[in-house]
Image (cartoon, rainbow, N blue to C red; front, side, top):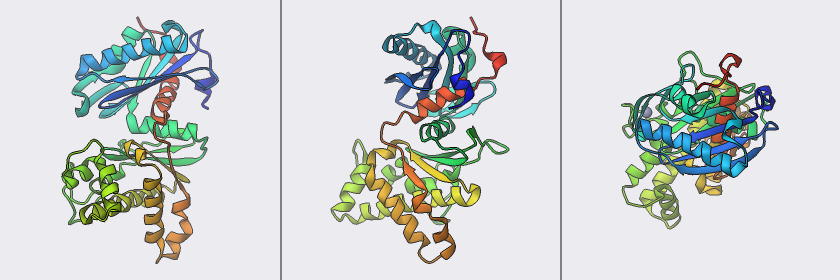
Length: 321
Ligand SMILES: [Zn+2]
């Protein structure tokens, strides 16, 4: 646990962390010993005003669930998709939320009465996964959801790189003749193992298309079998990219596709083993032993957001409003 998480700031000991996704907010309240004392999910509103209102409402709900006063909230951290300026708390181009430009930190802190710190959702989840798994040293968090992205944590801090793109392995092209990616390239890792790309390639309706693909593959459907191979191949490529570029000790896999559970984990491990068969060098890296899957429904992303909030620079800890 970070020192900031254990500090009791002026009688406002509760840290709130919010993972704001395209459809729902997952929110946790964390006490000074680092334990989650309340957790709440609610739908995310669409558009800038609705996103701010949803955040304020879920904090109120958390206080009721956790049996604390809203005024006991010392810090709030928000993990949110899109382009996030972690210094100013401004969010740009969060298209899944209907947000074009939002001064989230300023607007939410004025209402909540506590500092609100904002971070990219995958980077926040990386921090949370490292803390929940008790990982010291280096790790990468690989988020397999609609898209594919990763965050790298070194010694308890996010490693951003020079322009904030460290860990963006989803857009590493591994096949120049592959499917066109939303980013404009062909054959990006995301086109192999992103839930959105797989659903488009599958082309059949369903609530959980990637689960349908695995089920159909097990029944011998050739299209599904090929897409299942793409999923495992793409995720294995992402793990290799993270370890070969940053030599992280562990790669923790999270995101919506973790709902597939052991089928996903076993498939990725198998692809890593197969890919290393011909290479004594790759075998020596033992990649298949260095990956973990977060349990479906893990609070890692919201917990990581609470850490983001708690590491607010002390000069900003005076409550606003
Ligand atoms: Zn791409």
